[in-house]
Length: 124
Image (spheres, helix red, strand yellow):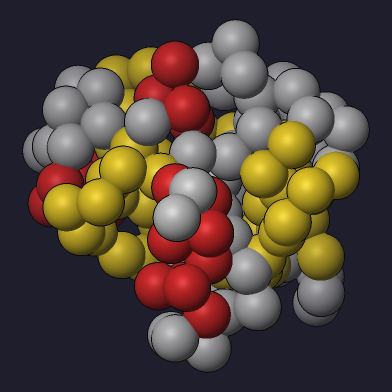
């Protein structure tokens, strides 16, 4: 099973319609201590379980997240978007399989996940 599909299965079982992750202008890295370290308005991912390790975040839409290392191998995520759900794609240019992470949703597990592009949807 591909990592993206595994992630989609986990996310889908939690009332998500797809996958996960961030990109675009504003991607950054940090050494966070908790999910609450994710700034408001961003989708954040961490390289380790329980929101540990290296963090990267995205606030905008991105057609290519492959230059951001953590988006290619993460175990924790948090959609701290201020008004939208986060839509991820398994391939660049908003293609491949996809899923949606509701605003406010966060999760950590031991599986390794990735995303290659993203957009924001269902804005309120």
